[in-house]
Every structure is written in structure tokens, then in C-alpha cells.
Image (cartoon, rainbow, N blue to C red; front, side, top):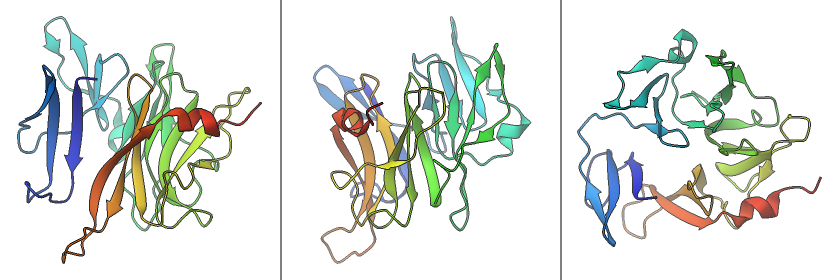
Length: 230
């Protein structure tokens, strides 16, 4: 909880080009840290011992980070945009789709071996533009963004809870406390489980009509409130 990693894919007031930035807590203040141009954005596994870069990864060693390793040809063939990992090593990830045909997949770690990517069922892969999945560290739920006819407009945030039989429940829209007729996406829960971060495409109150991606956060209690009684 001492660093924030932010990817700005459109320009901001002080950065006219897309960039990745790190905000690091130093004392009681947050400081912006430089990130080398072209540096790849890592996805952190719970515990901080593995960094994923799409179909590749690094492991923490006594001397620092290992050399880049491959998850396997089946992973590198997929243009992974967003990835999340559970404590058990299960990966969930999307792909850079076209015309809304993105599919969210998963891969478990079974007896120390990584299984081939498999697509989730219709509970999750329904509608269009399904992307940016987040799996809870204990695998009790998955969140993602996508467009459905029953949504509030453009891309909304959805959640699916793990059922007693191990299957995934029907997608639940996070509701009007989070979703609007604008485009919401990129759900991430902080490591302490207290806060939900996401972004929303907002039209600035200026003459510039291009939408900008602003970051928002709310109490993660909304997850417990949405959980169906079983």
C-alpha cells in the first residue's frame, strides 16, 4: 500500500503524451517517480513475488528479479491487455479484441504446472468488450468491465461470485453507485481489501470534447453488499 501504478493512455494536464507513472509514499507524502519510456506495465501477484507482463513473467529471487520467463506459447499468442492473479496462482486475463469480441480466460496452477488458457462461460463472456478482469486473492469473486444490453450505457463494471460447487454465478452489475451512462472500467481492489478503484471516461468541462479517463475509488463494502445469500 505504499505505491500506486498508473497508466495514462490519453494526455493529462501535465503530460501531453500517454505515459506510465508510479506514485510512491515517502514519509507522509506521495511522490511521482519516473518510469523509463517504453517500460512495460507489470501485473503484481498477491505477495509480490511474481510480476506478470502479458504472456511473460519474472520471479523474485534473493538477488532481485529473475530473467523474463514465458508462460508458454499459448499465452504469448494472446494479446493480453489486463491480467490478475490469485494466491493459488490462478490467472485471469483478457485480450485486445476488435469489434467487441474480447474473451476473458483463466489458467490454473495444478500440481505446479500451468494449464492451457480456457475461456470462462457465458456468465462472464456475455455481451461485448469484456476486459480488465480482477480475481480476488481467495478466488471468491471476479470483476471485469463490459457492455450488455441490460447495462447503464457504455461499459459497466460487473462481478461474479464463486458458487459452492466451484462454478461461477451470474454476472451482477455493480449498480448506479458505480456505473453511469459513461464508460467505466479497470476494477482493482487494494491489497488490504478495503477499497475498489476503477476508471471512468469523463468529458472535461472545457472546450475540449475528448473524454479523459479519470480514477475513482469507493469502499469495497459494496462487494459484500452484492453477494447473494446462499
